[in-house]
Image (cartoon, rainbow, N blue to C red):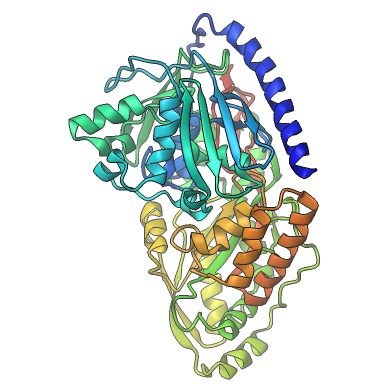
Length: 543
């Protein structure tokens, strides 16, 4: 019965998408004229690269995924609803294991100074983009070895058994088992479609690694240049397949790590959009006559991960003591300054399946000290505490938060050394497990609970976004069961159990969910806050 519902829903999607595609096709006759406008975005950090499949942070995705690329399915601007992308429509087999995508005709890859395509987008590009992640022996993968953390963290390398070209505009994905969030997952950044023709030309030239520095996609903006730690320049794509979606001819990222400097640049109109204001800057920015300050509850979580592969935080009692010693109320007051709420769960209250019954341990340094003594550490111990070097939606001031936690832990005899690195290096070293504990966080990618519980805590994600390196079979079994259960009410029960196990085992300490603010010049038209944590400039105009 559930499978019949699934098939009917897929057919309905197909009909609706086909109608939308037909309307769009009628408008594709001529490339749109793009208004001669420039928008400057003051971003908080440099991207680690321009190949979305290799990265996991909003800094990277804003700079590559939603400028240069598209995916088979896309999330609507400002929301989490999936809509057709490079696939006009799709069908799902009655058993829920086969997805057939009908591709959009007439989509052009971008022409750049370093590549001129000779054909339009087709099934070969989809097969290449996924085979590269699936097959370690794929020629391009061998020429340019790379890791694909999202793809493997979600177990897609084991789930997808084949990606086949049926004809030039039809691709079939076959799955090992039913996967409830599969379509949502295909809207994510790692699933961006690359040009197989471009990859082939790089392979022949012996320059496969250029795919990460000189991107080519089908998206709304064409990459022009990148000066590390300074600027990224894009041009509006005159051949973009969504008519009227590109409303600016020049998009410039002005990389400005200091939040105070970003504020000054926005006030002086040196940039028209900025990332991640500090809480202290929110009221002054709201008072500026030429700046708008939209906000919404964040689909995010800031937390402190314990690397359970390191002693003594492999000991549950030690983790409970460390958690209990953190004055989270003081952190929310000082770090978030009214723009955050205490976190108790490994996902936010706005995520369906959130367990409202979970309570975190009360702040109690005396009890924490007693727990440490019980664990054999009456005199405390030394450990590292990593502090994020950048502002993120889930943590506006990693340095201050680390200093507060360091002071709290000192009261129970734990001597924490604060360590930090440049953002790309921070993430790379954390993936390698060099830390004892680290401040990190997450903004949901696709609106599904699996994106929190599986991606941050699943066994498959231990070398990726599971920075706690925590693999606990009773929890992981529930994550796997949730993925293969189509019914949302049943999935909610499963994820509630998983959250209760998390609370018992405490692989990380949830700290806060923050409110997201998006400072923007009033010259900017239709900039939206993206609940999934990146910024998008398609559909955005300038007065």
